Image (tube, rainbow, N blue to C red; front, side, top):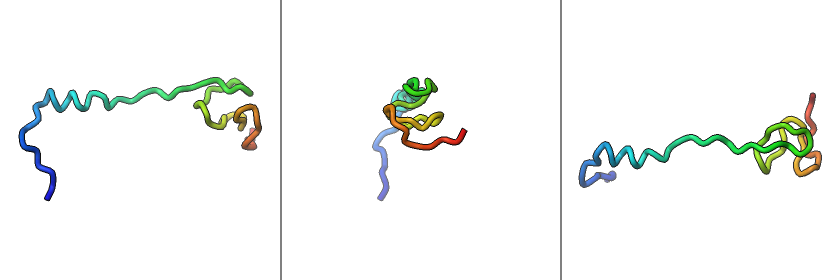
Length: 60
């Protein structure tokens, strides 16, 4: 058996439920080593540093 709604949901009620499904811009911070924009708590893609430590070697 599948789910079967008892009553019809109006368009307004349906759209109110879907109103919170919106995209949000990702948070960006400056890298403490090179100054490039990056996501917080992740390795910088430009220089490969995380918390002032070289984690990944980046070819430039």
